[in-house]
Length: 255
Image (cartoon, rainbow, N blue to C red):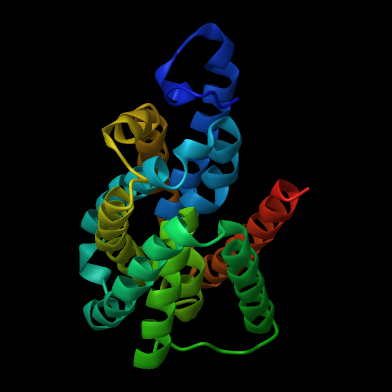
């Protein structure tokens, strides 16, 4: 559905409404899940927005992630793990810079397959009983991997989610939200530097703001019912799903 001109979402003729509605539904669902568990927007919305128009990922989706993460971080600011957040952000900076270089020099498919496989492997190990604790080295590595994956694909939650999978539900949501507020902003700066994000793409993101806000609002009714056990199951399930989608998308693109 992509054309040679501006992004499809900026030419709102009737032929594009079915795709736009599908994208809006994906953003609404992703926002609801992310505001309830700490992750989900990129995992759910990225594959669908990519089908609507490849230029909607990663830049415009990172704008949406920045917005919903800001809302979550403010709502649950008292639960933020400031110490762990600082370590993860230190790792995010070099990961984002390396991703910026990679996106301009190296094939994206290679990195999508590699990191998709690594995330899927980590999820399987975690589900089998292997415990990943939010220690300083683990958070540095998770921050680096998240910065790299998030800048390239807009799916950067799984590495940090695995590090925090055994934490309290509120801490997972709040800390990851604060991480993505700062991390997404830095990723957008890096993408703009390498010519992969512009005002046009920022305007395209605005089309999906209403469903994003609706998902966040509804999450306020869902959050009190999310237990630590359910939050952990959601973290592992969504991380595994995102890795599988990432691998499948890359393999199909090469067919």
